[in-house]
Length: 362
Image 1: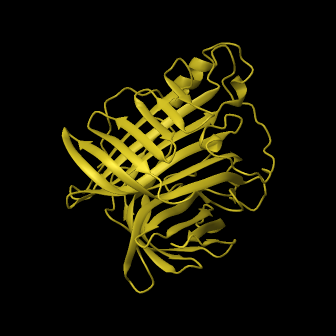
Image 2: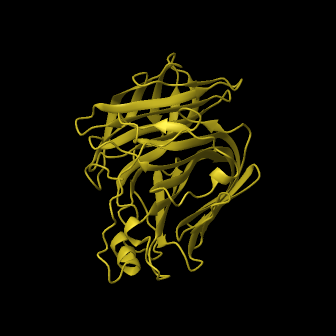
């Protein structure tokens, strides 16, 4: 069962009304254009891109305290509100920041989840354009060289983790330009940082666990992400035990058919193969129905890629997140194991599934 912190949160409506008082409150529609190919420059492109409509920084991973296993995820979102960009008021909600945090307690078979939301400004929330430095009230994520530090305290749980790069950055798609649909405008700038060496602590109900493990970082920004026919997506980011990194995703329509698919595989020798349209197939093998939302999710998949045919299996079934107090979505995101075509466990990482409770809109 998902447990929420009692820390106060604002609804999206409250934030928007606070920022656009006296205005219509409706963001102006700006037609998206195809994103040009560009060379990503670091550390600048680890920072915020406020001229783009949508952006997120996403870290997932697995860790152990002794023999006790955990999964963890933290995500910071930034959303540009077009209708307020010309307002002079310091209270105008030009940029909204959201954040999610979760711990999967495998032994306890429980997911702990919390969320935050605020408009940027007043030292309450900001995302630097120079490098990865994000603050949302008492939650933060920042980079210094090849090290990332995250602190996300909540009432019933918390994360205080450090991540050290062990590999070079992985540019997804065509040198960091990742296609997400049949039209060129459906694309994002997207890079990953797999195989992050992880140390730090997790806290659950007053109990502190010193942990070590591996993590995966994704950072994406875009003007238009979803095709109008797309209802959601299925995505995996997997750290393999031999040092390889596997990304695979598909965007689905309401009938469950693939609108688009893609991903990549990088070997321990740093050889990168980027998947082409049609090379990734997700086939559900087993499903689970949420007792809270009555939503059914596939929690075991056969994922065909050019690298191998993999089985992706949730470590525990109930890893559904209800983020209606922030981003507005109900989705499934959780720690999963990866098996190769011979049935051998070869790695672990995160499976994310959106659009099953209701069509996702971005």
